[in-house]
Length: 415
Image (cartoon, rainbow, N blue to C red; front, side, top):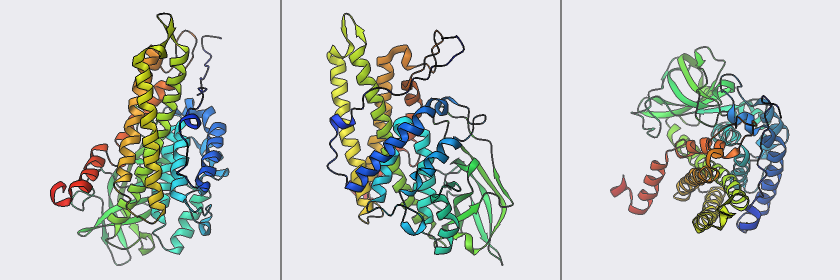
């Protein structure tokens, strides 16, 4: 191999999912979706995963080819009703969460794009009128345009109270004027529209804002430690004129839409965490079997036996928890707490923990993007970098602990 050639090492470790996890919780339609998305991810995402993970957001940009191939294969139809072009599944939220896990097994960037496009922006649009859904949701389901969802601001992220939100929409004789800045907005550099949470008087309202509207400016993509295929950027609104057709849901009802959407998103992020955790676990199990130290396999040392046993058990718990939360959502619970908070807390924390220990077991090869001697790469470092964001976005894990504590202790004590 030449010194300049790059050998991309994809995940070739045997999958432990089918050996250790017996999916007796998921309905038939969910199991079918999982199998279908796994095959799509293996075919479409895996060959591009290293390039996406090690690219530069401002140079390489959005992974359009992968997104378009997945859209053509019907990935974006999974969460939605038949009347907007969706698969009309009996358990759409659970199937969507399983899909997020399977995508994240190869690329958490792709899972995050799917999450924001469908679980956040797409789900928010289900609160809209029939006309809004025909105009914005149906093309999203078809993959004709991409959606974005904007709640976070420079001074407001976990705190979405009206006092904290500084993006303001004011009434005019013809509609609304929107001013403000949103930050860390996934998909915004390529989105056709942004669902925006804004203050209207002393309450919050959601708006559908086309990105080509006069006064909308999308900034440079952020350069991030991981999830580099998930483009995020500031979105600035300067005297953006909107009419009533751009109001999503009821005026003053935006906080409920945002919170309900984010609860769904937390299930998806928890599932993606499980996907990364499973990938790291599979790599770790293979390495412990093949790497020899002191004349015996690394896995013959009791320390690593205990580590792998603990993580196998935690994977079982984390996957079952996100599936239960999603099943409750499908059963009609708009806010399936505390399971949604538990799902995000468990799945994202586990991905960080296993990725860290996998990097430790791999030694230097768990810390490099590319080895200089032969240009070989490893997925362990990628998972290590990508996993951390799961503990931060769509409600930091400290917020999830507060939600769980409030469920146990009550609002009077926990707030």
